[in-house]
Each structure stands twice: as C-alpha cells, then as structure tokens.
Length: 482
Image (cartoon, rainbow, N blue to C red):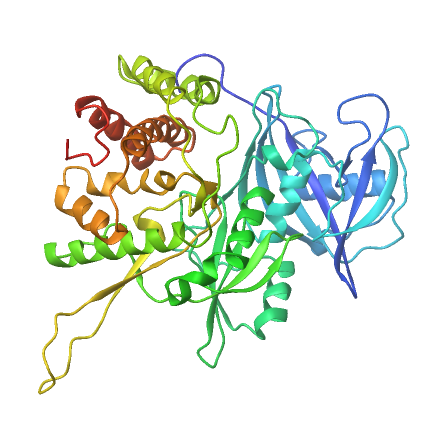
C-alpha cells in the first residue's frame, strides 16, 4: 500500500434473466423510478449486498425476488461477467453479473418506488436510454468476456453514450482453456458460415475489441470480431464494404456483420504479424517496399477530397492528452508539443484520402513465396504483405498512416527509403511537417493510455518517439534522414 486508509468499494449483483425467442435471445430490463440517480434509465434488475452475512448468489436470488417477484433456485445461477466500474463522479464499485435461464413466476414490478417499468429487450438490440454501466455489462456478457473494466471520465453522462464508450474487455489468460464468445455471437457466426467446432481467442492484449479464430471440422477458418464500441464497428464495416475490396487478396473479406452485437465475420488472411519479427536485412527492405505499395493502394482506392474546415491539429484537441500525460512527460515535452501544434494551425490543409488509421507492424502480415524447386529457373524469393484490422479507418491525410509506422524505420534510413520507393512518391514539405506534428500528438496519447492501461510498451514507445522528435532536425519525418 502507498499509505493511508485501505481502499474499499461497494459490490453489486446484476441479473441477466434470459429467454430465447424466434428472433434471438432477450433479457429483462427494469426502468429506474423517482427523481434520484439515473431515474428514467433502463438497467438490469440489480442491487447491493445486504452485508457480510450474504454471498453474491444469495444476494442475486433475494434481489430478483424483491424487484421482479421471480423465484430463482441458486443451482440455476451461472457466472457471466465481472465489471469494475467508475462513475463520472469518481466513485468505484464492482458488479457481479449472473445469467439465469430458469425461474418460477412471471416478472412484474414489485418495488414501484425503485422501478416503474419492466420490458424484455433483444440482447442484440438494446434500447436507448440505458445506464452506461449496465449497458457495458450486457455488452461484455454478449461478447463472452469474463472480466471487464468500465471507468467513466469526469463529464461523461450516466446514460450510455456511444461516443464515450468506456468498456474495456480483458482477454483471458493464455493458460486457460480456449475462450469463446457469448452465445449470441456464436449464433450469429454460425448463421453466416455454418457449424463451428473450434474457437481460439486471438485478441490483441492491448485492445478492448475481441477476436477469435473460428474453424470447422472440414478445415474452413474465419475470424470473428466483437468491437469495443459502435464507432469502431461502423468504421471497420464501412471500410470492408467500400475500399478494402480494392486490395484483393491483401486484405480480409467481410462475410457478415451485425450492428446490434457489434460483431463481424471475416475471411481468414494468411501470414504472420510483422510485430516482433526478426528478418534478414534484404527481406526487411523487400517487406517495407511492399508496405509502401500497399499504402499507395489504400490511399488511391478512392479519389482525394478537400479536408473539412477545422480538421487539423489544434491546441484544444491536444489539451486532453497533454493533461492526462503531463505527470509522465519529460521536462520540455509539453512546450515542444504545443509549439508544434501552433505551427500546424498555420500549415495549408492536406487533401483527404481513405486511410487505415492504425497502420503499424502488428496489423501487417507477411508471407514468403516458396523459392523454385531444384532444376527450375532460380529466382529471388519474394515476400507479400497483407493488412488487417480496419476499426480505426476513416478519411484523413495520407500521412495519418505513416505516424505509427515511422517508429519501425526510426534510425533505419534504408527501410524508410524502401517504403518510399514502394509508395511511389516523396512526401511534400507540408506532409513532412504534418507527420512530425502527428507523431508528437500520437506519442502523448500513447503515454496517457499506456499509463492508464498498465501497458509499458505503449508508454515507452510514446516517450521514445517524443525524445527522437525533439532530437532530430525540424520537419524530418524519416527519423533518420534530414
């Protein structure tokens, strides 16, 4: 402990009373009554423990009877998800969510001073006007998450707001049995591709979206993804339906999408992530040339368009990240970033193109073409590069896709040259300046999020990039070329 009084927080229990219908699973919701906290918003039947004499299952059975009149046998209670929540006011609590599929009696309002209405809602079509905390718990349950964090920020609304979705899914331990998504996601995926016999959780530990490799007994394989929020879901689906098909075999194909579940099914893409790969120098240069060619195809997939007014970096946009990262910045970092952003406000606007938005080595896969068999004409083995994960895709300046990739060629001018050779053109002076500015802003964001999520790699990358940018000549985007 750091000293002082030991932290303690309330414990809640939440009931997912579930029934199956022809249109999919439904859950029981109750509407908060009165003029108090979250009045008028929908949530699951829930409540706190009465005291240390009561365990969480006993509390759930009691709350269900008191609020809805239904009688639940403790043997029919199933663990669903645990959510660590912080309200906009800063108070924390832990919620244990339980699934129940068998009960006695018909649900009805039993405590009108607490709840003034009840309704059944489809799990994949939850209503507007829900308590954000409870909505997050149901979304984590639908995704098959076992533990989730839902830490709201000061100024967030109590009601669910898709623009401020704070749900963070924690992936299961790699030593545990292979996880699988919730039943609603399984049903959606099997409607798209048929019976799935094996699920393998392949989620990237740093992100809150969940990804599984799904395969059948005939050797077919797909990827099923549940997005952490509606914004990421709509971005990825839009990209997959519009410009990603122009990449052909260099990207996955969208098989099915469900906006209610925020889930998609994708075709499998062969290759190994470049993140952490140790490759010979010649092969690295080949790969970076291929990455440049792929970036050019992305940026040429649709005609360029003028950028909207006020779309560039501003001090107002930078302040939020600077505030969150301030205690972790080196002396002079904040002044350096602010000076860069002031310069950005004087730069001419850049045209917008389609961008990937998270174009970095962990989202790039490589495969090596097998060299010719003995007796066949010799040829140098070539490599191919493919791209995945379009949840941050949106129109923007082309240099948006070089921001996170620049860390990979920092101090390696030969890799930067190979990329630009594949890209087919040099950056303009305005693009060079904008790339330095965007790298600095992304670094501050990475420092803030790396600290908040306990991710030392993300934190260190942000610090490393800021230090490099401050040491290099002005407007040097290559990290090694002046």
